[in-house]
Structures are given as structure tokens and as C-alpha cells.
Image (tube, rainbow, N blue to C red; front, side, top):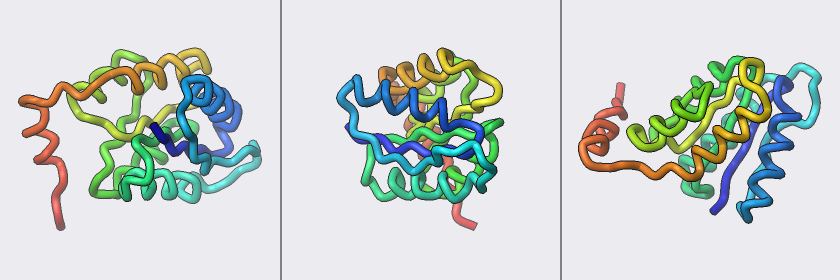
Length: 144
């Protein structure tokens, strides 16, 4: 498995712990995030993650910013991305099982590092249920 990860200045510590967890699980990581807490523009670090998932270069993406909103909005601009902004592992499980989320957006200023790690584990371990949910997610993309 291969995962792309990206973050802004609100989450370099979170990203580093998540990368360590992924490596412990034998997962290859493409790190597009910043390692500094100096202010940066989150789209610069989220677009490469979304593009990697969109182009099937990686299996999943994990993105982090302060609220998770800006990162999530940026990722969801790509037609093949189903990014889910999650704040607990129960929401993560539903995002994977019902929505087949392929990107996890974490609000670093609103969850603890321990919660973030639990969310990542849940994201990786929860399969998509398919069935009636597939027909629903197939209705998500809309050309304008």
C-alpha cells in the first residue's frame, strides 16, 4: 500500500507521527507536507496529495490543516477524490464504509494526536461496504 500525506503549518508534528505509524505498518509514504510551523498556504501541500490519489499513483491520501476544512475543500476539487473531513474514528469508519472515502482530512487543531492516529488506523482498516452505497457515490461527480 502507498499513501500520500500533506499538511500545512498547523500539523507538522501530527504528520510526523502519522508517517511513523504508517511506516510501522509497512506502508510506503509520499510526503508532500511541510516540516515547519511557519505560515504556509495549505493548497500548495494538498494539491500534490489529491493529484497522486486522482492519478492512481497512491492508494489513499491523508491531509491535515488547522480546521481540516481548507485541506478538504482543496482535495475535493478533483473529480476522483472523495475526501472526508473527520473528527473521530466513528465518522472515519462511516466515511470509508459508506462513502468509500479515499482521502482523510484531519483538523489538527481540534483533535489530539492520539485521536488522529486512531482515525488513521480506522481509515486503513475499514473496507467499503459497496452495495447500495456504490450507487450513491456514483452520483457524486457532476460536470458543470
